[in-house]
Image (cartoon, rainbow, N blue to C red; front, side, top):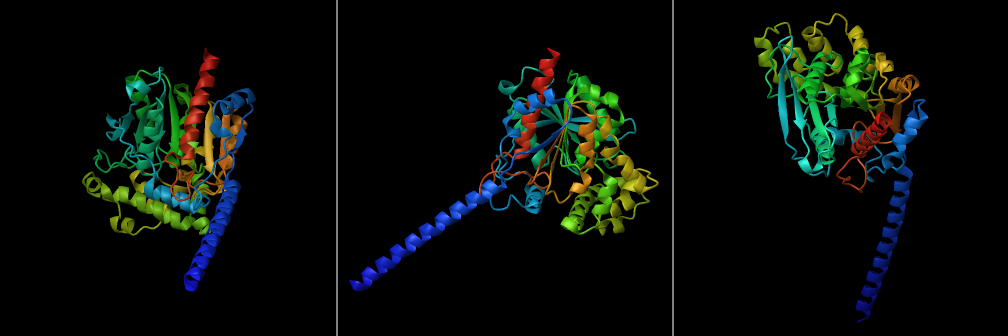
Length: 409
């Protein structure tokens, strides 16, 4: 009985110790969570009345963003997990889409997908159409694009997703051409067709990563295009391709490793169309060197330069950069970046600050955490089913539209 008594006592002490450790861990994780949480840092243009009304119309601007406890404060984790999964812990976005095929003047094929909300959730105004321009090599079938489209249709918006030429492997090329992030002719064709066939006067532009660069270049290089947009949003773009090229050759922030990852994704798109490109006369391409390329610049030298007839890549990077056109944007605009984004370091964030100086209704929002397109929030290991960036975009678009329409009434 004495041995049993000692065993029970030891067991009780063990339980008390375990409870104490649990309390300490709980308090520590709460402290970490509170320290990691932050509200968005907002820099804005000079139209203070408009800006205040937009911010006041959505609580997400004043709420604290709490990244996922275990790994959410790492920009690398946020970035890699987004690249691998797009969305974590989200419901399967079963929203069906309708693909639209267009014949471009140069004979190439341009496509976009339409996502429609349930009739019970359709907003009263048919003008609430969001045009999404995805990131490099992404399209309407990419997980995070489908998840975002699904989320917005659940809130009554119609969504059109522009598919970069060649990004969809099951869409056969009609001309020896793959997307670039400086040429806006195909996007212009998609917008024109959307406006004509859907009988709407304006759309809402949303660009992710390099898609944000393409969208803002499209709007800025010919300012009259903005007549057909209520507003525009850019998420995690780098703005300056020429400076980014130099930074991506460095190992700081592991950018050289990310360069390899981007190269492999782009290479996969190119090689998926190899046979079609050869049949259409792209016989000046060194396919073996493309297969062994390890950087975006190398791929641009071997492929982009030849396919698009580019004489000088440095000039091409300068011409492709939205930073050279962003000062022409006059419609309400939102640019969002995370300060721990390993692909877009702070050296590239001069352009959005120039935007808010030139555009009274522009906003530049930064977060300390979020990585590249991640912005996962909530939970200890598994994040909430909706990311912070999706909530922010819904809040901004809804609030800004309400302000714009109240001014027009």
